[in-house]
Image 1: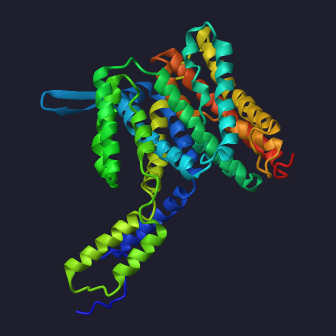
Image 2: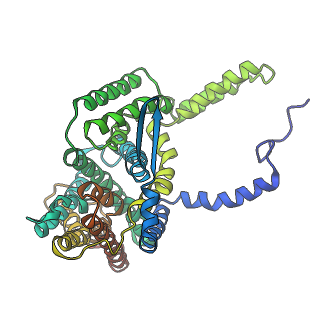
Image 3: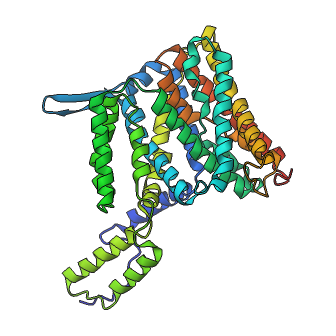
Length: 447
């Protein structure tokens, strides 16, 4: 039989009509996935569904997310609610991607040198300190003071979405600054979660965690590059942190920071290896062919670093599945359950004001002061007004703010009020950020 038949545009054994239909459906989805800001649209839709669901059928909403799910091994049973598995399970993958992005930025991105990192670091520092101080000023001596960290966070999906909607008004350096700021902001949130929101250290859990980290480092030192091999120490680390009283989602951050950031073959090595393996390819010797294809597959996989490969694979799942699920499970504020009286009112005001106003004062104020004092270098195309837009857009807290609110407040009126405040403050930041961008960036942010 001849082996020279032309290559088909679809896999063998596929039904052509079904294949055409699948491609027609998938193509628009793939185009949407290629746009970072599209995740903000899905988050917005998930939030709207959660709000309507929680107020139209509140019992159904809570019953669904309190559904018990668990594992049984012999006589041991571990059972938690669906809400737990989303917040502490799936969000571990979210934090893993955050850890990967931090690792990459420190190695070769905007945080690779002190000169590059100075401006986003100072901007992020201001964006964390000032909102927290605004909240503390309004809640000092009150019941809700434990929520001081809620307005510190920035939601990158919504923030990038706003800049994308502003189109060509936004200089490229402003997008880069926002991304770097968001990475540092995430580091700050992670530190707060690790140091503040824990339930007391357990030696047993700590030993498990240390053993899991040691195993991960040993595997990396042995040159193991397959992500699947790291699942076992990753799961053990998650269990150890949970047992130790530390929030288990930090498992994701630690594993992300330990992931190899340098490619083995690189693009040139992949090209060279592929060329060598395809030379004198013997298609009649099946074993030899498979061996050569294995070599090509290894070179293909290692053309980029494990960090880049994992971000490429996991980021769409995080942006378009995990984060919307988190929003669906956590943004369902029962308006009847929120309290706008007494100490709860100050929680609401503290978050709703700190997000748009505190972030603006912190990010824009610290950035402009740093450039004036020559502590950081301002990109030539960024004027003073660009920092105002950056500060307002940075006030979109949402995902991380809701996450911290879950840790800061027990279930009840204060938590519902904090959620409502996060949605209100983030909504104001979106509107003000869009308005300021349309007015202030019209002339490309010239000071």
